[in-house]
Image (cartoon, rainbow, N blue to C red):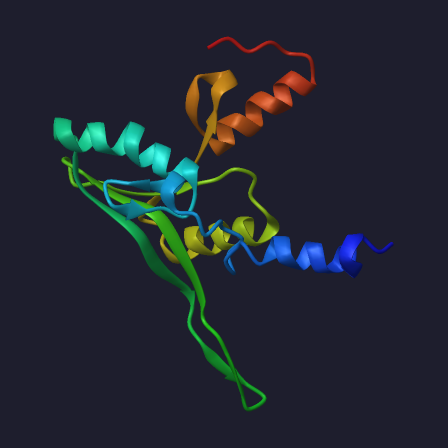
Length: 163
């Protein structure tokens, strides 16, 4: 089907996709910027603003690093071809005042790659506390992803959940 001025639907689809970066994030950074920091998503920005900043001000968090890379598998050579390293980039690495370290990843709906990288992270860094956090307004806001899955499973079975 040809639209007005002779443009095809493919042209409009391509035009719409050009407004996004290679990580499928909008180029408009105004809505995901806080304290001069540009976050990968609005949800990450909200977690930083609503959870991390108040805990830093109260002194519970000593340091918070953003976008810290962890190597899950080093690069290697196979059949004279170099295979790239598998790298996971954590959203937040938080150090608490008691010295414990927690790696937090903000998830909406994890894909199979994220689940695989989580397993590799657990295998390579068993001493680090690694958590997926999700924002669900229905269940009171920030909730761990495993707890969210459990609640959804129980609701599907007809069990009730109380906050």
